[in-house]
Length: 77
Length: 232
Picture (cartoon, rainbow over the protein chains, first blue to last red):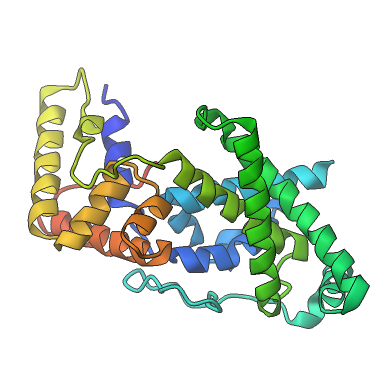
């Protein structure tokens, strides 16, 4: 049975295969993306290329996770 | 709606936005409108709004610090609170400077929070790497190692890995190789590398993106399967 390590490592090295935005565009749209996610809408349809960027950029991914956690936590208080 | 072109990850531009649905300013929710009005006011009203905003940003920065605290055992509580305060201060400056950029695509507070979370995250990444050498040569090929594979699978992976390693040496420019190795192989945070190379995150990611595209094209030309390689 093949361990996932190789594919995961290759994925990290080669990044997402599809179109993606850059870090600047990601930051510009991140608040809208997160609110669409929290609302149960389809952020990937509204903001194409951002999810792929989150897959390829660990820093932006972390900041997305933080904003989602912080804003969704505020809304459930 | 047009798709974003993979070959042109756009460079940093303060007012850049994607070709997608953006509400007109008139669609601002009442709370966001109130924030803008009070922050654009003068005198005591503005001062009070700035103080309220700083408190919100500090809360977000402390949230980020708390999330990352387990990965920063060498930083004491006072150091971490200093980081949170500095992040909130810097975020406040950014929010006020960019107030006219707020389009109402989200609530004002969500828009503002991202500045505080970003500032705190960047500062903590840099603290974590303070005084450490940034590795620019491949260090982590071991993460590609798999054990207990069938001989055929092991041979396929070895061939693919050897081709990737050769392509990194032969296909990429020295700058692309350095950026790809540091970020995608050695796990150097992009903000840390940007600081060491005197550039910015967006420019580095563009370089990384171009390097990855070159590698993918090189492997594709050789008929090497990359299915599922996007998994993280």
